[in-house]
Length: 279
Image 1 (tube, rainbow, N blue to C red):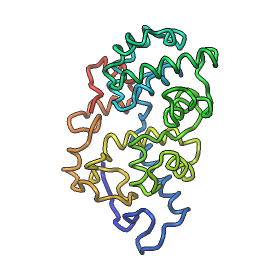
Image 2 (image 1 turned 180 degrees about the vertical axis):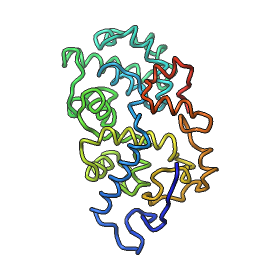
Image 3 (image 1 turned 180 degrees about the horizontal axis):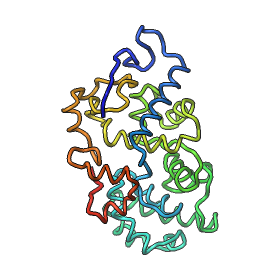
C-alpha cells in the first residue's frame, strides 16, 4: 500500500482544512465518497463475513455474532443449520440442547432463548419467512437495528448501513460523525454516501477496521486512505512497522490468501485449500 500523505488534506478533528477553515458539508461529502471509492479498490472481495445461504441463516448467524467473532460463528453454524434447517425446526428446539450447540459463541443461554423466541415469532407471525422490512425485523427477539440492516442488505438487497463497533470507530476517525450513538452514526454517514453504496460501504469499512484501522493501534503507515483521514497519526506511521500490524489476509506472509481472495475464491474454497480465515 503506497501512501501519499498530504498533512494539510484534513484536520485532526475532520472539521477543518489546511488553513484552519471549517470543512464544508460538500467537502466532507466529497472526502467521504473518495474514501469509499478507495476502500472499494482495496477490498473488491469484501462481503458479509458470516456464512449463510438464506435470510433465516443470516439472521440466526448475526444474532450469534454478538460479543464474538465471525470466525467462531462460522465454525458453529454448519451443525446448527443441519439440525435446525428452518425457523419451524428452530422454534421447536430444546433450549438446553440448543445452548450446548451454540456455547462456543458465548452468552449462549440468552442467545438460545432469543433464537427460539425469534424463530417462534417468524413462524407464528410471518409464515416461517424472515420479514424484509426494518420495522418488522427490529421487533424480533435479539435483533437490533444493526442486525436488521445486515439482513436487509445481504439477504434482501435493501440498502442499509450496519453500525458495529468497527464501523462506528472508523466513522468517527474519518470525521464523518462525532456521535457514539449507532442510530445517529447511521444517519450522519447516510447523508454523506449515496444509498446504493450503503451495504457495500458497511462491508468495506468493517473490513478496514478489522485489518488496518485497529482500535488500540491503527496501522496508519499502511493505510490506503491515510491522506484523506483527519486521524492520521493516531497509530504507527512508519510504513514497515505499520505493515507488521496488519491482520487477516493483509498480514505479512499471507500473500497467497490475499491473491486468492482477490481472485474471487469463496470462504468455503479458501478453507478447503487449507487457509485459516482467522486474524
